Length: 509
Length: 102
Image 1: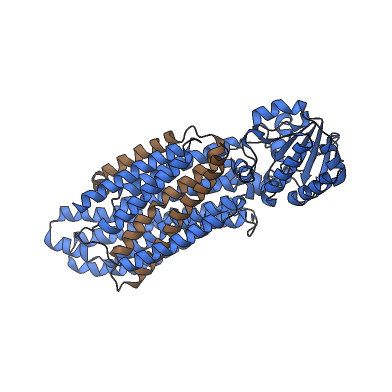
Image 2: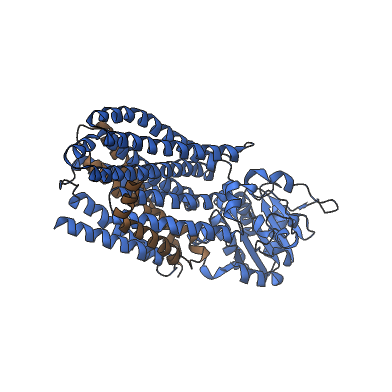
C-alpha cells in the first residue's frame, strides 16, 4: 500500500516538473510554475523519507541524521538565496548547480562502495541458482556500474566546473589559458573514458571468470575490489580536474552559457540516480532538465549570435584576442573625453535620452543610481528610456531583472527592435558599461568575430556618451570603432561613481 | 555482452522514459522569450535537485556502523537540499522582480 502511494507521489512530482517547466517559459505563469515544481519536489522528498522501502521491504533508517541534514541544508540554502544581491544571482545559481552535481557524485561513490563491498550477493546467486540467471544478475551489476560511473563523472565535472564558474563571476578566479589546453583537456577526457571503460571491463571480467569456474574465485574478485577502488578514485580526481580545466579558459561573460550547460549536465547526473534506484521522479526530473538545459544553452548562444563550439573552444575567451586587436590602418584611433559636468549639462538640456545598460552596470551594481538619474532627468522634462539588448548584463534577461529591482517601470524598457527605431530621434545615448552590443563592426565588418550579431544602433543618435572603466576592449576582445566616432564622447570611470557624480551635478543645475 | 543486452531489456521502460523526456524537455521550453532565460535556467537548476531523493535513499539505507556511507550520505543530503531550497527560492526572487511591474 505504502509503496503504491509513493509511486503516486513520484508520478505527481514528475508531472509537476513538466508543468512547472512549461509554465516557467511564459512570463505570466512563471512564478506559479516555479512554485508548482517546488511543491512536487516537496511531495517527492517527503514521500521518499516516510514511504520508501528497499528491496527487502525495509523502511529507511537514520531518520535523525536525515532530518538534521535536511534542516541544515534548508537553512543555509534559504539564507543564501534570500541574502544574495540581485547582481550576484547568476553565480548563486552556478553554486547551487555545483551542489547538485556534487550530490550526484557522492551518491555514485556511496553506491560504488556498496557494490564492491557486497560481492556476497554473487556468491549466493551462484550457489543456489543456475548459470543463466547468474549471468542476468552480473549483467545487472555491470549495468549498475555503468550508471554509477556515468553519474560520477558527469556529477564531478559539473561540480568542479560550477565552482570555477562561480569564482569567475564574482571575480575570485581569473581566466587562465595556456597553449595546448584543449589538447590536454581532450587527453584528460579520453583518459577518464579509458579508465572508466577499463574499470567496467575489469569488474566485468572478474565476475565472468568466477561465474564460469567455481566458488574459489570470489576471492579473486575481492582482490579486484581494491584495485577497482584505486581506479575509481582516480576517475573522481580526473573528472574534477577536467571540470576545472574545462571552464578555466572561458571568458567571464560567457559564463551564463557554461552554467546553463553544466546545469543540463547535473540534470543527466540526477537521471543516473533515477536508473540506480529505479526512481521515475529522479529520472524524469533529471532528463527533463538535461534536455531543456541543453536547448536553453543553444538558445542563449543564439541570442549572442555565437555557436556553442565557439564558446567552449573559447575563441573569444583567450585564444583569438590577439589577432582581432590590431586596428586597420587609416581608421581613426583618437577618442575624445568628456567631463562629468559637461555630460550632466548636455543631458539635462536634451529632449530625449536613451540609456544603454550593459555588463559594466551590472558589475558596478549601479542599477539604483541609474534609476535615480532617470527620475531626476524626467523631472527636468527629459524623456528617458532604456534600450535593452537581449544579452545585456551577465545573462540573457538579467538586465531586465536588475532594472526591475531598482523600480524602473516596465514601459521604459525598450527591446532591441523598438529601441533601434527610436535612436534616430534620440538626442543623447548614454552607454553604461556596454561594448560589444553597440559595436558597429557587427554590421559593417565581415571579418569581425561578432559580425552578424544584432546590435543596438546607437550611432544613429545625435550624441553618444560612453561610460567605461578604460579603453580596454569588451569580452569579444575587439576594438569598437564607435568610441572613435566624432559624435562619441568617453566618460571614464566606474558606472556607479559616474552616475552618482552626474546626479550631484544635475541636482545643482 | 548478452547480459548487458539483457540489462537493457530489463530497463526498457526507463529507456523509453529517457527518450520521451528528451523530446518533451525540448518541446516544453522551445518558445521561451530571452527575458526568461535566466529564471528558466534557475528553475531547471532547482528541478534537478530531485537528486536529493537519491541522497536520502543512500543515507536511509546505510547501516548505522557504516561510517563511510553515513558521511557520504549526510554530505549528499546537505548538498542536495542546498540545491533544491536555494534553487527554488532564488528563482522565486527573480520572478518576483517581474511580477511587481505588471
